[in-house]
Length: 258
Image (tube, rainbow, N blue to C red; front, side, top):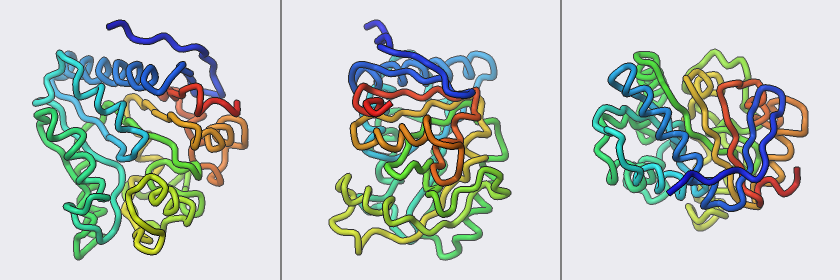
């Protein structure tokens, strides 16, 4: 099946933007790009490594990516970018649970390094995970944009474009926590964890290539702010406009306010 063509392409500062007619077309095109990036790394270096996001907006993209043939996943090492503090790995809303369901149970990856959000020593866990990330080249980061403009759990109150950390503990913005309820991860705001561990903005961007997958109407306001507003931590996703190695994939709904 041919890769769908975008209905619109443009550039904002250093960031390339592609708009597709539907969520399915977006997912297919982004997955093809991610597949190609990993395949090129395997061809040139024999191994590959990627960071993946955990969110409802990523489900179709991950479904297509894990079904595409011709990639030797046994030579691919995976990381994820955030996890709730104190939430067990078996909890349905845990990002470890999400990625096991949507990735690890579908393809035989070499290793999947998970953030242990329920550790008794979260500062030590930040250092452990940072050491793992620093130990090898990361070829690809696949991420989304939150309804409040966050990247991973870098919400506006804690986002830092020059963060000296690689992984840190953050307090979650209420808008971010409400998004988790709206996506069905938690039944009410009161039970959404208030803290999380997250890769920082510089850590997310310190990779060979970035693919940002942002479908759905509910993301349209954040997309507009990221692309048309100032480059500022008040909209963390605006940082992508400084990343020439990133491509933003939108559908007609998420691009509707541009």
